[in-house]
Image 1 (cartoon, rainbow, N blue to C red):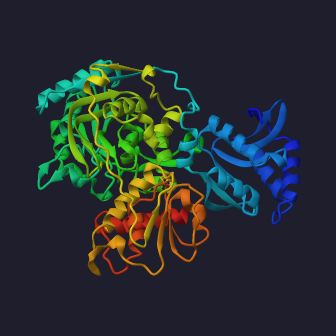
Image 2 (cartoon, helix red, strand yellow):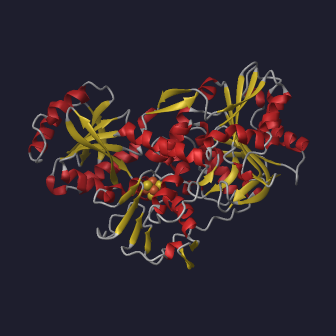
Image 3 (cartoon, helix red, strand yellow):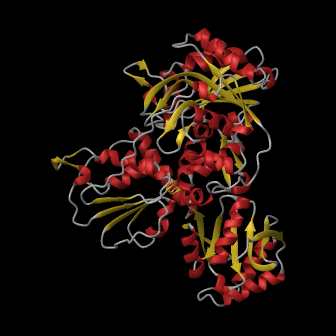
Length: 585
Ligand code: SF4
């Protein structure tokens, strides 16, 4: 079949009659289904039809909701060409829209089967006009595999500038301040970003307490306080207010403790009338619509960020065991309220990180590369001294330059890849002007974490083509099974004999033979279709560490479950999961 093109068109009576004809042959679909749906679609200005053509012939139709990035129906003209024609139509749709979802009638088994084969997974039951529907979400792992090397759906037309600044070995505060000032000057000076009397929010990365060991500060985990102090001192002559704002990701009620632990609370003393600190995890929040509604239609944003004139994001130069890196794109996760953080895992972390950047737009991203973190970042890796600051206005460009310095290909990070594909910024060297020393001059490869997904005796891990998200999080959880079994310390927990073999499935592969007589655990959105046949499903994309630990340790009921966060925090996480599940059931 020659190439398919899609042309936007109206909801026409011809399409409606094709749909009526199609559903007349689908057992279990009420005859009024099409007309009831059609009325709904006609009332929604965001719904239109894509006409699919090839060789000047109409090949099919896609009813599409632009605001929700959702395929409401899809039909091919020629039954004989199915599913090839449907696959091609979907390929072209994704080339122009990136990540999409779909809604299908529960009785439409034909559509369900080809959509599973394509890479969609059933994530939720819905009802529309009394009709039972299934929401189908596309596996991001498959999307990345199939569309790697494709052009972004929106071309980022601006050439971005990213500045690199070296600081001396073991720098003192004044040297760091000079470095921060010089970096910002390379980008045009602070007055280019901050207007007189404006409110500036500085968002450091204070993810957890792992950066303090026995009272001794260990670099590479949280943002070096001296960079934040320098930014405050540089901003104060211009700004009306400077707010340091963060919401810790582990032990979420402990952001204030993190501020105190790392001495951030003392920064207020620089000018108590103008400088303050805010815990974004307890801040009031306003709901905002997510443009293009991918995975989530709305998100809650802390008012401190919503009301800021200028946000300066200051992440640390570190690897991340699941996202590959945690830099400008990933670090805004800390800006979201706790339930939002949890929901991002549930509905798809990678896309929801991109969504945050549509709603929270820092004017500057400054990477703390004085001491970075290699190996098992973002909290359990090894500090790596780099003596660098990297800054710019575009998160994707800043991350691309920083990743190249770290020896990491930018598009290997799922959220950076998605952000690039959806037009948030450039990664191509020819579209980024680097000012300061060249990347080659300062590059020093970071050592990657070794992800160990080796199976145990009766505990098989089927990782297939999972993306780094499920692999990294599963490694994190399974590592807790690679310790002596309290029931028999001569073996590891993972090697404990089971009467019924345990299988852990992750990634979107559909060719694994699943034995219903064994104990099967299915991870994430990619395996949600298999979970419908029985077994245990651990929801999320990737499933939250706490969901994985609880799920795996339920196989070892006699063994004390390791703690992901402290006890009260874990109870809250469980409550949040219940809240998320209740909101979508
Ligand atoms: S479910 Fe897991 S493997 Fe699939 S896209 Fe999400 S994180 Fe990747």
